[in-house]
Image (tube, rainbow, N blue to C red; front, side, top):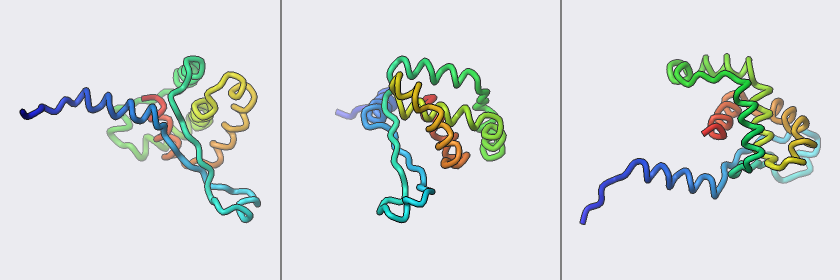
Length: 134
């Protein structure tokens, strides 16, 4: 028997695997301690967030204005415009997604936001925030 390809089922399976495994990204180490460490990058993993973290991220996303149609038309220039307008807010969204705990977000969101703001390239920041949004 030949099975037909179900695109929705395949997409659902793919998204479930991403949720379980998480999305991993790295940032370069830029301090003096990088010379004493074998690793030249820091790893961060974004897993399925809790509802409270989702609520905080939704608030931040509502403050940004992402027009996906413009991104599809001219992705590079629109990514630059979007990053210039709302890079700090997108860095905060990534920080909330990484921390994913009420007290961690309250205590470390500002520090991690600044860290991501200065360590993640604009294109990478946009890619990560789009993954979080989806």
